[in-house]
Amino acid sequence: MAPTTIPSCCLTPQQKEVLINAVKNRPFIWDCSSQYYTEVGMRRSGFSQIADLLSDDNTQYTGAEMQVEWKKLKDVFNRTLKSWRYWESMQFMVDNEKLHSHKMRKKNRSRTEETNIQVAQKAVHEIDNTSTNEYCSLGNNQDVMVDQKLMNLEWLASQIPLSNSSQEDIEHKDDTFSVTSNQLEVIKQTTSAEVFKRSQLVHRSSTDSCTDFTCANTTEPAHTSINANLPATKRKRSFFEQQRADGYLSTRCRSNKPSGPQKTLQNSHKMTDNTTASSHNCAENSSPVSTQKMDQFDVFACEPQQVYLPKPYPREYYVEALQKPDQIFNMACFGPDCSLLGYVVGVYSYPTSDWYQPNESNDEIALLKEHSKELAYVSSLAVKEEKIGHGVGAFLVAQFIGQLRDSKTPPKAIYLHALMKHDLIIEFYRRLGFKIAGTAVGYYTFKGKPYDARILVRVFKKSSKSRLVTIEEAVTSNVAKVSATVEQKSEDQKNG
Image (cartoon, rainbow, N blue to C red):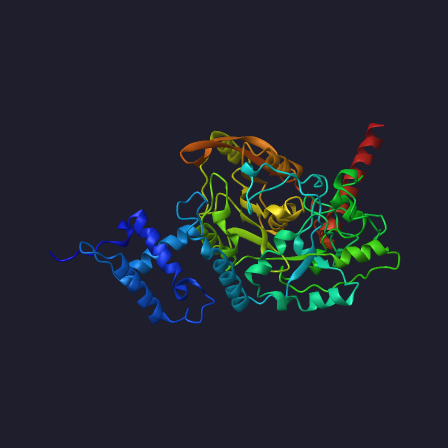
């Protein structure tokens, strides 16, 4: 009886383990740093050898089938949870995937023009490990105030360096783009002892009015020195309030708005003589980060397989979102080594989007009817675990809100879902102006167990916009008022 060829999906778990170990021993198949990685013929030969290894008298596999099976395993590895049975076996792919992602980004994206900001190093709040994850956790950002509206990241630029070493680091930051697996661990060693280097707005406006999305101008003097090492619990004012008092946060100058977040911003303010020596130390220990729109290469850096949420998002979720920029807003925050610190994905308009259709609950349907379905939606907000409490998540939310405000048809409100048992996440959004609007029963499902979600909404205030009046309209209006006044006086005289 001739051997039969069976589909690759019929591999047993033991055969899949053999396949993984066989691929591991052939780096030219999976290691992008191998000198034979680009040799297609050698890769095909390797899969043929693996097929012969798994074939027996009853079944016979082909190299193409093994290649398809390996691609399936690799895709699942890049988006699954650690509970996957083959997770430990495929750990040899972790460093390669990160390195491969950075190589592609360096080749396909120019980062010579980017906006730099400094994220303050605040105390990292302790969170239960069972309810957090590396990339999709939000901390109890106690310094975020609802009354103080935050600025978009694109309006912040790094301060002129105070030392030659820091100047060199900024001028040649692109040279550190190609990182190794060891350098990737540098960002994980960042502690709350590091302090931020001062950053400022490029353009400051003293006439821009405060709306629901902007900061109010401050009358306090700029460049007031602060002790950045002071514990957060002993600060009299919140971090963002202090920064606004120091002149680092101000209203947006719409007339001088750059074309986009990748626009190079030039510093228009220098440090004054009253800056203390402690500020110099702050600048030397800084860790600059940058923001810009995500592209398909950032999807690799999202590493959704690290997610411990009941509803993890696969890689295809981000790829599909990036393909619809007219419907989906996305913004990522990168560290000095180009590692992903956080990102936000949002839907501009819920009723007109064909990309995201949530499972509507009764409370959610009532919310949509109340606002005539003119709502935006925060689909995903993620912050790296060691950056929780540094203000990254709050800035990303403000970035999305600012984009909504500048749209031609701004929504009436913005809403989202949050896991009910994550009290810190719900408190985080409440400090950003969100309010609980209801509950979505069984919104999340994990291992067959339903989890409820809170529906949080933030209603936007209607900003009063002044309209320019033509001379003809002004004259007509004044004439009508004068005529009405004359007629009223005439009637009063007749009656008197």
